[in-house]
Length: 68
Image (tube, rainbow, N blue to C red):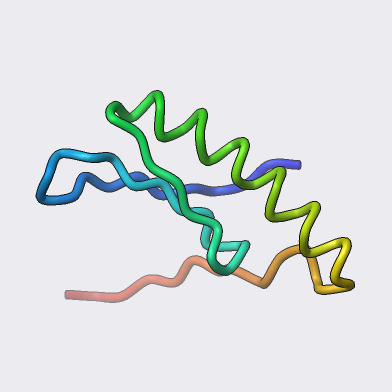
């Protein structure tokens, strides 16, 4: 499965990775690459837990355009 992730840097310099399609699926790392590796593992674990609990694996995500 392919997922879109976001990676941001917090005020302490830690990289925070999130998967918007899986509520609560967040990880972090000291580098972008570490955060990306960690979110891949977190996604696997989140999917396993959601499947075990009979929850939908993902929620719908959509891109929209906003004029600013």
